[in-house]
Image (cartoon, rainbow, N blue to C red; front, side, top):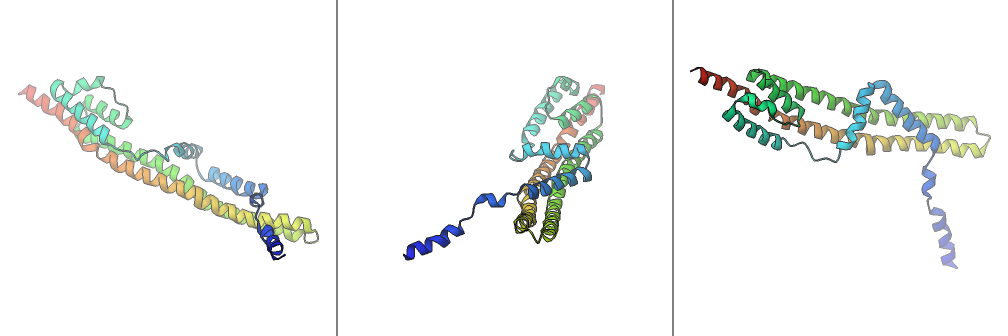
Length: 228
């Protein structure tokens, strides 16, 4: 008899996952957050922020393979001259631009400036994508609050209808929950990880400046030797 009495409260305490799903609250939070992102950022930055998602689980950028390739190019340049590097196949766009500048006769300082400028431009693109996700983390809780206010207004407007009160209260509470979840479990973690990846890549690419600038010095030194 006692077992039967205890089982009734246990059954009543069972929570169905479906009660945490409310289409209206989801629409308010996700739709409002998306609208805020589009209004606050340029569309190309929004596109970059979405494209950046595929990089989240990649290994951080490592400049070591590029440094090894630069060393190989240096050996070729010492033997055949910097102009022979014009036929080299270089996949990295920053490195390719620097080598091409050295081939065209740019000074070491000019090559270093080219690499530095490209690093800064890349960092600006990364920063714009990060700011989109940071903005989403800021907007989502605010949209949750808007959903809460919307649900409370709907509830107070229908105090005489018990069936409507429950649905309005669900919108009010779940909107706040959705906003907090989107901000703290989606947007902020993405922004933090992209920030770490961008910081690592910028630091690694700084290691390329001196070796690439040295290629330009090789050609000038070789010309002085030939002139002598």
